[in-house]
Length: 257
Ligand code: KIV
Image 1: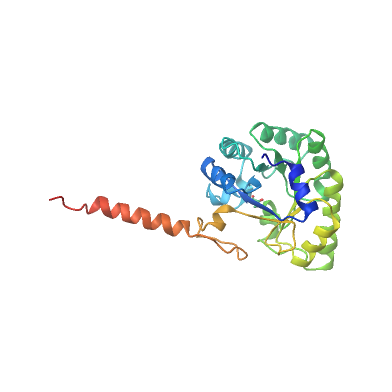
Image 2: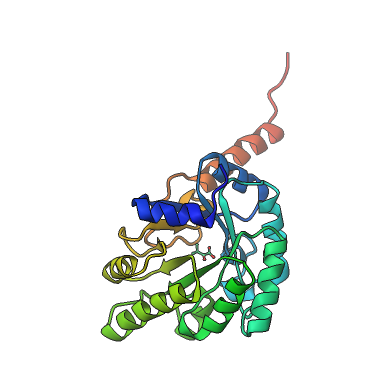
C-alpha cells in the first residue's frame, strides 16, 4: 500500500514509530522499499557520501534532481522526499520553483533547513500543494558558519528557540519535522508539544521516528561515521574482501589439469 503524508500523520496518532532512511540511487531505493521502510529521503547528504564533497553546501539542484529521478524509478511504496539544496530556497520564488522541479522529478514532499527565517517559503510551498518537512537543530547547510556539527538545545535560549520554531513550522503547514542533533530532552518536549511527527537523527529515542543516512547504517562510508550511529553491517569491508578475492582469482588462476 502506498505510504502518504496522511499515513505518517496517522502513525504518530497511533503512537507507532516511523523509520526513515536516505537513498540516492535505484537499487538502494528498491531494497529499502522491499524492507518496508515507510519514508525514503533523497537527502543532500548525497553530496558527502556519494559525490565526495566535504559538506552539503556544494550540492546543486541538478544533482538533486538526477539522484531523485533514479530513486523515483524504483516506484517505492514508501513516501519519497527530497532535500531542497543549499541556496535553492532563499526567496519565496526560488523555493516554489525548485520545489516544483523536485516534485516533477518524483518528490512527494520536500525538506528544507531552518525555522522562523523560512516561514514565507514554507507557506508558499505548502500553498502549491507540495507537502513540506521542516528540519531544525544542527543544520548541515550552515556547517561552515557554525564551525562544525554541534548539538543544539543545550542552553535555555536554544531550547526556547527550537520549541518556538517547531510550533511556527507546524502552523505554517509542515507535515513533519526532522530534528538533527537536538538534546534528547528538548526533542522529547518538541515531540509532545506539536501534533506533526518529529523524525530524529542523533536526537535521542523520544522522537516520533528516526532517520539515518543509509551508508552510515550499513557501514558503506567508513571514512566518517557520526558518533550516534551503530552500523548494522560492514558493507565496505565486504566489498573490499569480495574485490580482493576476485582480484586474486584473476591474478593467480588455478591451473586446470
Ligand atoms: O541530507 C540528509 O541525509 C538529511 C538527514 C536528515 C538524513 O537531511
